[in-house]
Length: 121
Image (cartoon, rainbow, N blue to C red; front, side):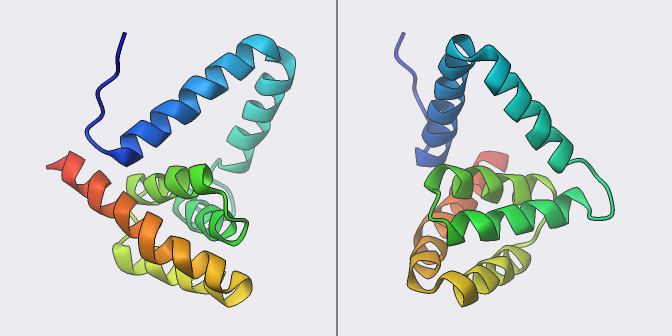
């Protein structure tokens, strides 16, 4: 069955989730433990989920992890972050990771915001 996507962000998120599903089938104990750990890390605590998504976006940029950059840009939007907040987080990541983070901030993050906002309308 052929999938049809509204945009590249939707396609990337689908491919990540599809790959995660296959990985889960092959390594259920490992994948379930990782998912439980990640879920615990992103629960509301001393930091809000919004703050945690902004941190995760910055780390994603600094480590040049394209799928996580997409996923956490979406997470920031889902948690109600403004473009200004997202771009400030990108700026902090750029201060640590230099040009690699900046290149993702000025391309991939902006593309994600644009495509995800279009889906809401």
